[in-house]
Image (cartoon, rainbow, N blue to C red; front, side, top):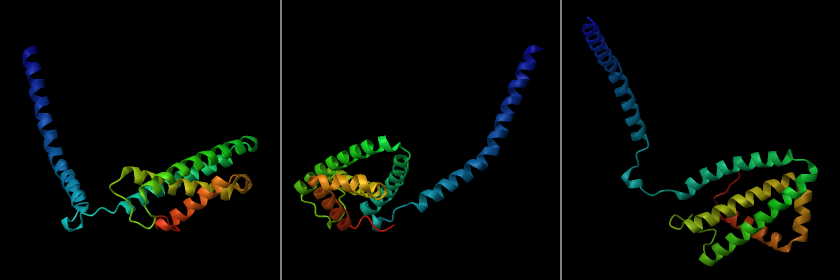
Amino acid sequence: MKLWLVLHLLVQSSFCKIDHEEVHVGEKKDVRKQEHEQLEAHKVDPKQTQIDHAKIYTGLFKASRRQHQIAVNSAKGIDIDKRRGFLEEIIVNIRNILTETRSVIERIGHPASAPFPHDSETLKDAISKVLENTALFSDLSLHFPKVFLKKMEKDRKLKTVIIWAYEYSKDTGTVNDR
């Protein structure tokens, strides 16, 4: 009797699985159809295999700018006594990054008006650092002008590299008013 009960339960559970799979087969077809439609929508036309690296970077730059806004708002929340030291440390870091990336860009000889690079990770990294740090410096200087103006007046190297970075960023055409 127990054996019959066990066999009965096994047969019933296998029928349930079969019924369950039949229900999901239709759903799986719908899901596969949707996935196929999504792939077709993103399919690249063989005639247009050129990747627009500047456009890709612009999307990443916009995401970075959102993070900058969060950082600026966080800096506003820091106690005034601690904020000055924090901002001065950021200024030094930005100056060092821009100085280093300027030397890389000038060593490679990539003018700002040239197309956005796609074959050199070093150059892409250097240009992105210039654009992002220039934008961050600009944001912070607008929100904390006294600290930044005082630092710019005292540090000629900072002033020189910021002017260079601003001009380079502007001339790339990657960064616009939006």
